[in-house]
Image (cartoon, rainbow over all chains, first blue to last red; front, side, top):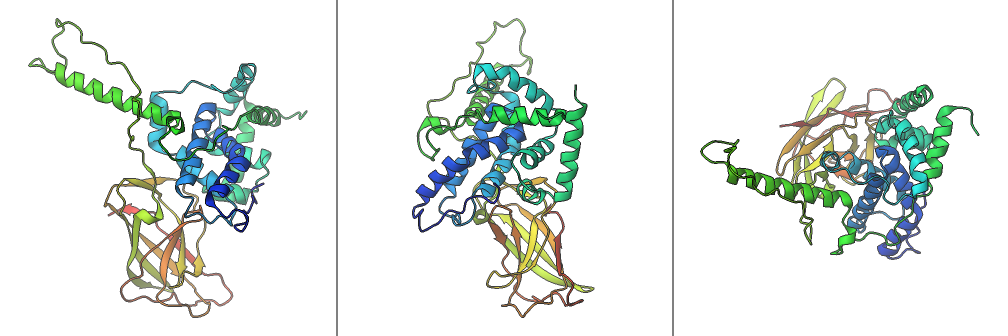
Length: 165
Length: 227
């Protein structure tokens, strides 16, 4: 998946079309990445929204012939680590899972509690490599760290989840 | 179903995450309020409440000091109201390459290496953030990469105020390639397809010597520091 889709500029002649395709094809990837990082459904929806706004702002400078997903994920990570964003969320927590089916909320709360023992890096590294099929090198480029550090993070994450009761 | 607890949690995580619904309309920057994220609205609310609270607190400060006179009747409690058009809340985002100016101040010789002293100035109109350590590159005048550094493990970031300057030194060693288009300079790959290219030094630009043909060249940087 992290090889991504290279948009053919000849087909996507307009950046607007390319942007729309990026939204339709990768929103769920961006959301899942944001969800792994934040462990917060509403925050992940916000982050995905803001990541696409950033892509919109940069659309004229983007090389659309290259895979756009890594760009989106790096932008999402940078937005997620923005210190003012995290301060705002601590001051005014947004209602949890407003768009999640009520029937799923209880299950989601259990998962969130288990994943909450992991750091954002551990959670995201685990999700990217175990669920999304990214290699450690690919995940490392997105997360701004080395493949070795990610292996260690995934190992810690596994150990924490196995030990949690 | 997997017997490992971690796999079961991940399967559950993935199954629920797959239920997320993409908003029908892709966000585009515009005047529509629905494009403003909840966190931005929350930030606007925080700012308004804070300003209102400070204003009331200042108004309440009399000769008795910040605590006020406890016998005075209570002042109305400010209520949080989201404005019809949320005003911009200052958030510090990543520095865009177009908004920073980097330059090689000078090159210094070292044993088998060349060290570039580099300055990075926030030339934009807002504070912004950069990674404390980036992936450095030695590039020639045409932008071709001569030496490529490693992706940094350090994920910490620094905030640069408007007009503030960060400095670093970049050490390059063992360039054994073809003669590049001079002058060479230093670039910083930001990992998202963009990079910051420093203006080359006015003079004294020199290539790192070839110490070992067949051996990889290296380039590494010290973390950015405030000047």
